[in-house]
Amino acid sequence: MAKSLFPRVIAPLLLEALSDTPVVCLLGPRQVGKTTLAREYRPDYSYISFDDSTLLSTAKQDPTGFVQGLPEQVILDEVQRAPELLPAIKAAVDQRRTPGRFLLTGSANLLLLPKVQESLAGRVEVLNLFPLTEQEKHRNENSLLSALISGKIAPQIIGEQSVIEGVAEAVCQGGYPEPNTRSAARARQWHRQYLNAIIQRDVKDIAAIRDEDEMLALMEMLAYRTGTLLNVSSMANELKMTRETTEKYLSILERLFLVRRLSAWHRNQSKRLVKTPKVHVIDSGLATTFSGLKTDDWNNHKSNFGPVLESFVVQQLICQASWIGSDFKFSHYRDKDQVEVDLVIERGQQLWGVEVKKAASINPKDSAGLARLAAQAGKRFQGGILLYCGNNTLPLTQDNCYAVPMNTLWQ
Image (cartoon, rainbow, N blue to C red):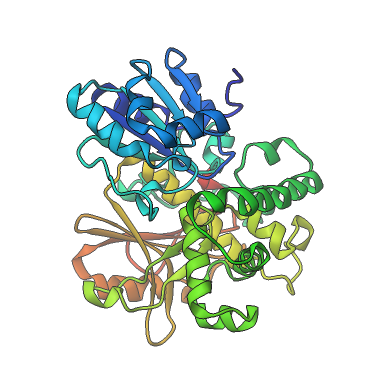
């Protein structure tokens, strides 16, 4: 069995969950290393994959008998293909509640699938494994999010103001392990083949769709619109699809961990439900491939790298949060004056803001969004950062807010 080329920060959390929870479910997109991680850290477990059509058919026909015949500790891979097993797994756990008995992996969010009638509540811990972060690729133990929430960010002048290197490459490369071993051109080819395979195969496991080409067109449009306010009606009109079909396809792409809706923040909780969310393609490599952006376009003012850079940062910080704990909430802020903060991070009664700028220099107005958020949040506001492409950490006009180099996400 091959070992992961990159250490996954979530591994200790996986082992901790297996030590006291009967069912541990490792969910995430295909090809991010779920199987590799599970088998690398639990080589003593038996392994069954539902990519095997014979095993899949047997499991669907007699789920209770299938589960009863399993070894004491087992990895069930791609379990979203056999949701019928979940009630049988629940029954087995209720008869004998042994920690770490079942390690499930899935390439779709099981809890959102229509066929899943059993949540395994109280018996399962769900961990999400996403594409590699830059912190993992660089094997760095320092977490920018940890520094932010612990108040450890401070001004740091390391030299004459200059542009940092490597940001465009990081964004275009994305986080899937396989493209990270390829040239840029071969990585883009992998992304295209990957998305085609997902839509032609995995979508059928979780939903019936009318037209595979329509779903591919929607994903391509989302790549162009990543990091922007979600307007389902506008996309439906442009794609000549009904709004209902567009919404259905969007929900499927969410279940497959390809896109994320980021809700809008408001101090009134009920108003958050009606305010417009943003949409983010989870992997920036996929987004740049399907929007046609390349590293050479970074300095081209006609190219629109800003929104995909925002999606890149949002994903990095959400992953870092998953390693710290599960009690974080994420949203974006936009008011009637169109003053924005790209990412709002909440933990209990504390709140932080994150702005993203492609520029290598800053000016006082760049902290306007953080200042507006601070005014709205009041005592809950703990501070914020403006991630930019300059090399120095500088104080902003808003208290406890700093302009921070983009590469602190991985250095």
